[in-house]
Amino acid sequence: MSTFDFGDGPVPAHRHENGGGWVADTAQVVASAYVGSDARVFGDARVSGTAWVYEKALVYGEARVLGEAWVFGNARVYGKAQVFEKARVFGDARVFGKAQVFGDARVSGTAWVLEHARVFGDAWVSETARVLGDAWVSGDARVSGTAWVFR
Image (tube, rainbow, N blue to C red; front, side, top):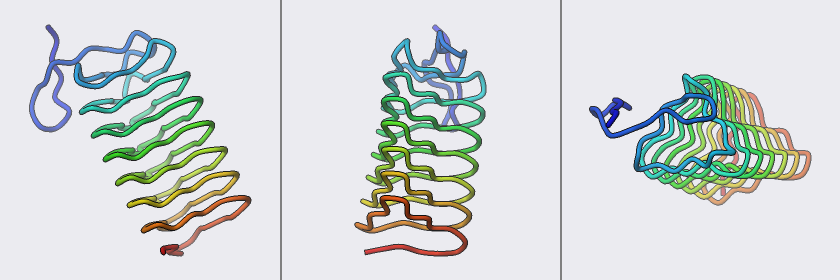
């Protein structure tokens, strides 16, 4: 049995067959998904479809990355957050709580999407922007700079 330390001490884990990244035995990553060699999936996280988690990205907690979504760079998706369809989360971005990012949406830079917020359609959240509460950012919206969107 292999183990890996995801930050809280070693736990049973294995290298994903498609990309070689570490996956805790408690997490589930389907064979059609890609987990790059420096990426990590742990906790009760799930990665399915043809989703990609790569570079130094982390997916953990009860997070879900589904469909054709990509999480990469130093991005973090955690809590009960969901990233799905063709969404992209990258850079040092964070998606957490029960937030959802989907459609062709993008979250990048050091942006955060948290709580029950949703970013979808062709929307972009970037730089140091924050989307939180029950806010929705959709369509062709662009939220950037130091902007905060909340409801």
